[in-house]
Image (cartoon, rainbow, N blue to C red; front, top):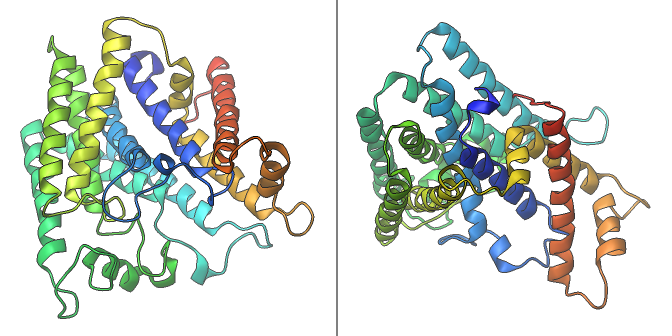
Length: 364
């Protein structure tokens, strides 16, 4: 998809999401972070919990612009597969890399699931489904996946013990991740990007596809439709929360609907301001959105290096920079931690700006 064919609001939304992903991933210290910039401990959600599903949502929206006129043939499937494998490969590299020779962790310590891995898998299935199903069949598929996931999580016992939505051994999603991945999970007892929870994550992108179809349609009141769709998803999601709690780590069906609801509301607002009213704002987000995956990967990789490389044998580059440049008596630790994160964001926004102005668009 050529950059010039993109809806401006979609690029701004994508870029803003990447910027927020970087911000919440790189505080000065995890010991002092403002509550909205932390994930919910388990059930419920914070603004930070919206960020990753927002990206999967906009992946779905972008699929419409990129593949609406593509034929579902071997050539298209090959391109989709290669892109998905690249994303998965980059994610596995981040999980396996260490600065000690031979620069790969011991096999038992390598995390298999991850953010980029989930993006790759979700993109693959969402794109394949989009190419082969019309919007009505996609709606049926989304409902089937969300209801099916709820039924699995709620009613399938774990080794004879009734299932639970809590963080416990008899939580089906957690149990399967431990059985399948063992020590290769994010935590010993679960992974927020685990196998079973990737199923509803696919629906996050399918809901983005519906939004993309609306944006590409000849409807005159797109803003109103998107606001209405967002509001409906929020209501249904919060009602479902009573029996299937909103939970990012499990990517529950209610979480899918609520986050997609907020995504539609936010995108509708940006669309109205930029594409309808022609108000110019958010250019820096557009620059970040044009090289979203590259910017995210570099931020993750360099952040990892900054934690691993020691300045004096004990203090990491990250710790040294934070302590010497951002910690001051007249600033709270939370504010110092936020300022560090904002500085990191500013650096990658500058990088994205340079890439954009030089017309360098790196496709993963």
